[in-house]
Each structure stands twice: as C-alpha cells, then as structure tokens.
Amino acid sequence: MKNKGILIVVSGFSGAGKGTLMKKLVEEYEGYSLSISATTRKPRPGEENGREYFFLTREEFEQKIADNALIEHAQYCDNYYGTPRDYVEEQMALGRDVILEIEIQGALAVKKQYPDAVLLFVAPPSAEELRRRLLGRGTETEEVVDKRLRRAKEEAQGIEAYDYLLINDDLETCVKELHAIIDAAHHAPVRNEEFIEKIRQELA
Image 1: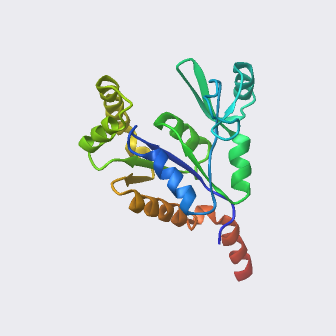
Image 2: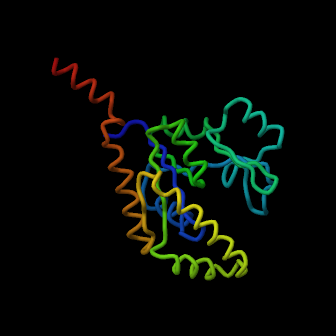
Image 3: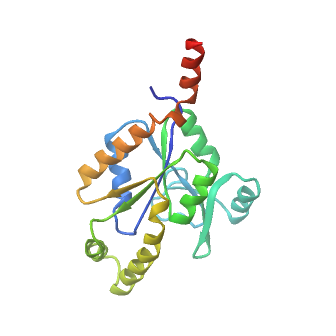
C-alpha cells in the first residue's frame, strides 16, 4: 500500500557519511529520488545541469525566491543554494520518496511547510570517529577539520528536532535501517487518510 511519496530530510555532521549513505540507498532500493538543488555557482568540470544541480543565474534564482518556487534556500560563499518545489512535488506525486540532504536550519524550514516530512539525523558512533573520518579524507587541513568539528558541536544542539537518529557505524546496516524507517513511515495513519476515510465509509 503505497500512494504518494514522502519527503525525507537528511542532515548530519560533515564527515558522518550522509552522501555515501544516500547513494547506496538509491542504488539498492527502488522508489527513491534524490532531490536536486538549484545553485548560482558555476558548474565544475563534468557536472551537468539537472544532474548534480540546476544551474541558474542570480536573476533566475532571485525570481524563484520571489515566486515562492523554492522550499528552502540559503546563501554560502556568495552563491545561492535552494530546493526547487516543482521537482520535489512532481516526484512525490509519482509515488517516489524524495530525499533532501540539507543542514539543520533548512530542515526545520522544510518541516514547517511539509509537516509530514520525515526528518533524519545521521551521526558517527563517536566524536573521535568523526575526527578520524574527516582527517581520513585527506582533502582537508587540520585547521579545516577543527572548524568542521566546532560546527558539529553547534549542530549537535538541534538533534532533538528530528524524528529519527541514525548512527552510521556500519554502512550496510545503516542503509537497511534507513530504508526500514522510511518504509514504516508509509504506514503512519497521517499518511493514509484516504484509506482511513474509505474504510470508515464502507463500515458506515
């Protein structure tokens, strides 16, 4: 019994493995779509419009803000990033579960507009493991790693606002748990109002 798709918002500390987790979920299970963000930054080599991002001019992006065509948006390093409403709603109407990977402020903004969205927070098993993963990337200096850990300390204050907490210790286990949570969310009465109404009418 699966009709309209659910919006799943995933947040977590930098280095918790959110990206890998989402990629694996989409590879292993059907019925998921990863939300594609819009941005005003220039495409990097190999990136395609509509695959990694929807690349927009500053004017186009600001028009979308004015038209309320974005679920949420933010500005980082002089560029805008945001989630196009039409793409998300089209996918959900097709019965696909849409996964949106954003930070805490954006997640709470989404929950206000879509109260039945499922909010998931991904954390590593420990702060020490988080530091190890960030250093293990080999792409960040000690200074950047410390900055990300300070940011994680701030983000940890908002975890209670989420519906579920996922500890990403073993990737395979975590992917299974993530799929099971989303599958269970489909069975919540709030997402089955049509069926409930139908059975009430039949009983009457």
